[in-house]
Image 1 (spheres, rainbow, N blue to C red):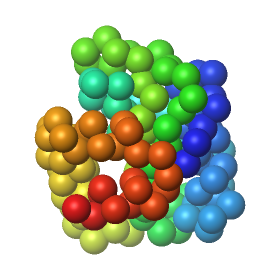
Image 2 (cartoon, rainbow, N blue to C red; image 1 turned 180 degrees about the vertical axis):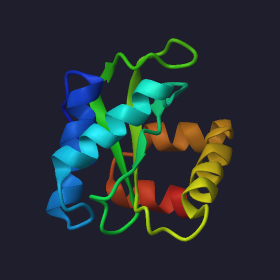
Image 3 (cartoon, rainbow, N blue to C red; image 1 turned 90 degrees about the vertical axis):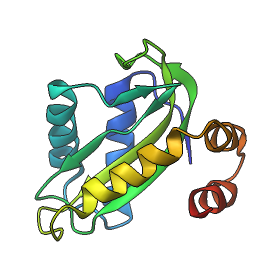
Length: 136
């Protein structure tokens, strides 16, 4: 999905609103604040212009991940100092069984270590392309 946020917080809020619209979260503002709280503990900007913000929240109805590309790079306090324009937002329900979200995060992080995967994500133009890459 294309995003046109001006700040990290605005990007997270816009994505939270989308999750509310699609029925994955019941309260976008509560989820947004939970994600910002998690972000305050340590950055989710993992480097290479990519961030994986996430939050475990009582507002999450269904655990899900949302992918977005922002039109302009955003300041994110990334580990490597890079700005971010590739965002994978994870919404995790407290009722999620065990550590399923950690496994999902580990799997995504592993894929993001692959330069070819990252290049493919960065060059993808449509949601369908992104989904195909993620499933590969």
